[in-house]
Image (cartoon, rainbow, N blue to C red; front, side, top):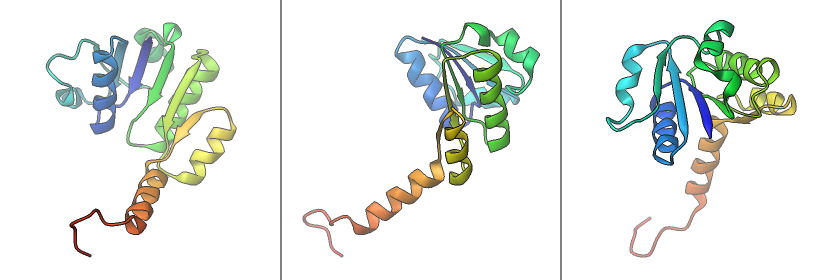
Length: 140
């Protein structure tokens, strides 16, 4: 699969490394060249400095040939803008977007984007941990 990832932070670099190790063709973009230091030394994908919200830049990265686009930058607005552009302008079939605000995540999911909210996922995990049984041998 040919995947373009926007954002080389903790999550973006981890996803990029995993996909690359699985044999996928990965291009990861970030506006900060130093962000690429998070990638492992054996990363085989492309590192590209630029803005994933810029139409011309996305063309140069090869978004038109991408099977998937994943937006993992730190800002919801950038992620949503880039994802909508990838899906509706460039026709990328699979677009996944991180949206920190759970309400916005649901809204954009209704508009055809695959979204996930780390805020909602974290809240669910915290709730489950609160009410999970303690493992044998642990004290309350």
